Image (cartoon, rainbow, N blue to C red):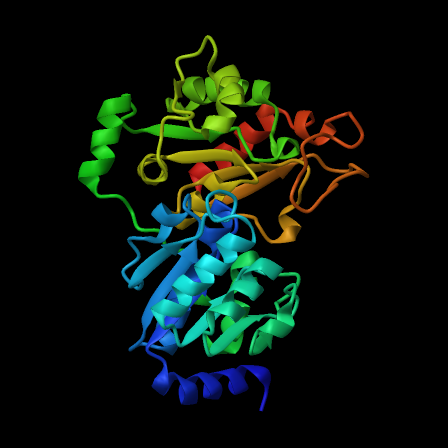
Length: 352
């Protein structure tokens, strides 16, 4: 019996007594988007069970309307629930919720300790997780694959046909989407530019975003909508200065961001959350990878998309997740991709 068959029969036999399941994913927003196929997978394995998710306060809006979920628990791990006291309080909350089974996509020691203290009888995590010995069962994480596949490996990849691995972010209603479009004067057709990232070395240079946006207006007749968090307002302002672009940086909730992206005709972004949101809604996308690489598993997923990057740099990729400054001081990966190259990629994805 191979590992996939083992997990299938183990789930089938144990699933009869499983009434309430917790999925834990408290990573970045983009990671949460890439985790949504796991919700569908759990639902297939345990069709009669309640499925809950624990995620960050910021990510709640991405998943709370998922029809497969019975509820969403937030964990403010870097805020009000930080530190040992936060872990203990959250463990008690989980204990009181009486879950039968927990799956943890997050690989931190904090998560392993919290679930152990929660007393959930069966706790499944990755073998590669820190403090994995605190789980009752561990699974080898798929290597050298897209993060969607790596996440699904927690459930046993042989249990599901790969076509089931779809990102599942609920669209906002047409009424809500139109309301935001009217409020911000961004009726389609429009392109979304997302020049920010938590990590500075993931940011394609703002001047090239600016040139690309102007070229898209001229050559494709698209309005330009620039999005970003409140921490990315400076770079978004630089992109929009002296242009007709609509700057929404710092103005949108996650729900409003969903509404803006789902109605876009095109998304151009860095290696960041808007890339994965565009994949979820099958929006044509061009992503510029600067310090990182799509080989790390965070590229587009099943939408019309291309990745553009500066080739033949001995220093690239310099880190797995990006950094706050260029180690060489040259910023060649951020400045070395010309807007004309990205425009050519845009025209290809829009033509297919």
